[in-house]
Length: 215
Image 1 (cartoon, one colour):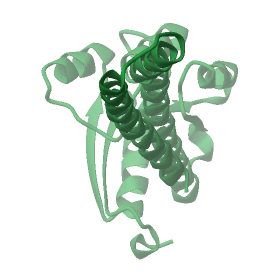
Image 2 (cartoon, one colour):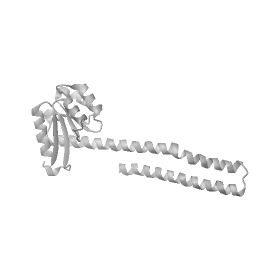
Image 3 (cartoon, helix red, strand yellow):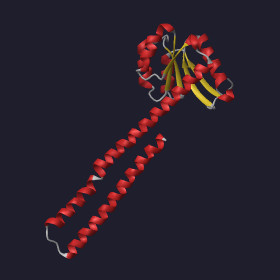
Image 4 (cartoon, one colour):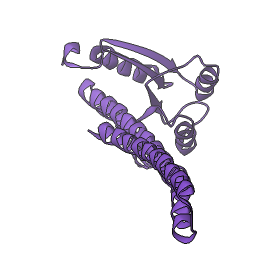
């Protein structure tokens, strides 16, 4: 498989791995796969977090070894999953860590790779799956925000003009009004109806934006 067969031109990856041999293997595969790949390696979790908090680390994806010198196992997975919800996460694991790797999927990790089975094809599929899944999750989150906004509009913005319309109708129906007053009340109904029409139009546009994102 050659570089020209891959669609993604550039990718930025952080590798949390303290084993030199494992890092070199992953690095070689990534260089073979992508036209342009920016790699940054950290052997200790604390060093990575400090650099990230300083704003000196930005990436599309994180490869995570389950055993680092300063933190490992379930605690490491919990830390990384909680801090990097918006970044794709892939675990590098051995056979002995397989149960933990599988459990980590429930905690927000996107995928896991068994080190002895890694090759460029498997690595590429895992990366693209993780990035696609993360992008899909972001789309769902955006759509949920739009839906919440629509729900708020329906329960608040529509209710105001609707209450005014019902109030005017009730006034006309229950109180005797002269022609001049009736003309004024009908004009208020017209203005309020136009206001409601604009609100409904905005809600329809928001709903259509969700449909377009799903297509």
